[in-house]
Image 1: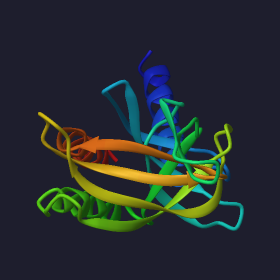
Image 2: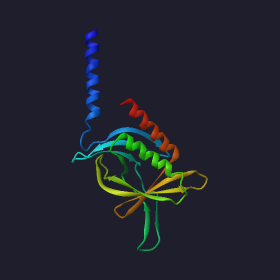
Image 3: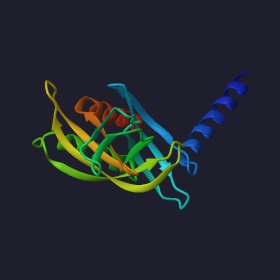
Image 4: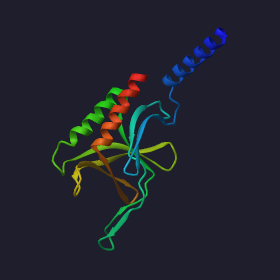
Length: 181
């Protein structure tokens, strides 16, 4: 009986060690995920076909909420975009520092804007072309400051808000995941 338990234990240890060191190409490996304000935020790792590895913060999925037509030429739309993922770095420490930087942005005055590299998805779990999301510190009516991310997909512009509490939860969960690995 001891041999069976020992064999199973060693097999599980080997499987977990192998899984942690080999990230499959083109597949997301979730590190942590939270849900807040009917949106899911997650931190995951991703390896491209060329072997490039990175940590990403998924800002969730955006759906059509509002369309404003100013005239025939100009319109602004909060439209369906499958997912936008902010690039956090190549290591867990860089990802943690990037989350710290986002938290530091919340100490800035409303209206402060920063461009952050991101990648979009096309409805599949794979990441597509690189892009840029504009992060603006905003203060909503009767709410605390939050980060508003604006990004473009095709002709449409979408936005997602990220609160201080969501950032702190993601940062803490990332730290716990680092300690477990």
